Image (cartoon, rainbow, N blue to C red; front, side):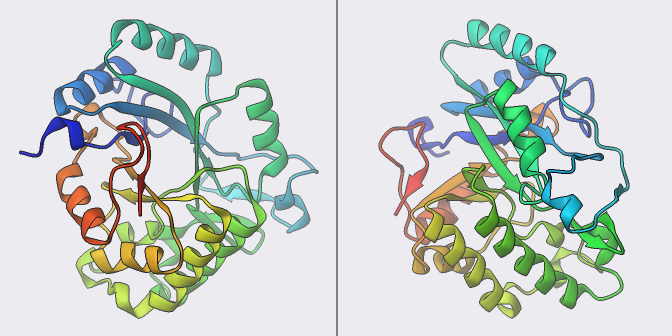
Length: 277
C-alpha cells in the first residue's frame, strides 16, 4: 500500500446535488471515504449542465435548440453550500473544495458566468459529454454506434474548440469520455489510432496553462497518453475519481499515480496541489 502522504487529492467527486447521482451519495459519506483512503482533499464538482439557455450563449448562435436526452437539473446551490459547510466543520483534517463540472462550457458561456457570479467555487472542471446533431445536443454515447471512429475524431476536434474558446475551467476532465461507451467494450478502443487528435487537444490545453485530469472512472489513460500531454508542453495533472457513489472516492488512485509518475509527473508544491512535470 502506498503511503498516505503521497496520495493525491480527488478533484472530481459528485454527490446527490448532481442530477445523475443517488440521494444516498452524501458529502459526509464521501468525506468519510476520503479520510479512510488517506486523501488530503476532495472537490465536490457537481454537474452544471443546461437544457435551456439564453440568447447570449454561443449555443444559440450555433443554432442549437434543445438537448436530448434532457434529464439534467440545476444545482440546489443553497443546499449544496449548507452541506459543504457542515462537512468542513465535521472533517477538519480534510481540505474540502467547492466546485462544478461544466458541461460544454464553450456553448454556455453566459449561463455559466451568471451561475458562477452568484455562486463562486474553488474548482471548475470542463467536460464534453454531448455533440450537436440536427440542432440538438446529443449524448456522445448515442452517436458512437453509427460510426465510432468518425465520432471519436469529431469529439476530440470539438474538445480543441472547447479549450480554445472557453477559459472558465481549470481542469480538462475525462479527455476521452466516449471510451466508456465504445461499441463492443472499451477493450476494443485503441488509443494510438487517435494520437494525432489527442496531441492537438494536449497542445491547446498546455498552451492555456491548464491541468489534464486522469479520470479513474473511465478506462485509465495509458502512460503513453499522459506522456503525450507532457511532450506537448503540459505542466500539471489532476486526479479525479468521478465518483457518483461514496465508495468510489479515490478509486484506483494507486494505479493512476503509477501511470502519472511513469509519464514524468511528480507531486506538486504541497499535498493539495496538482502534480507537476
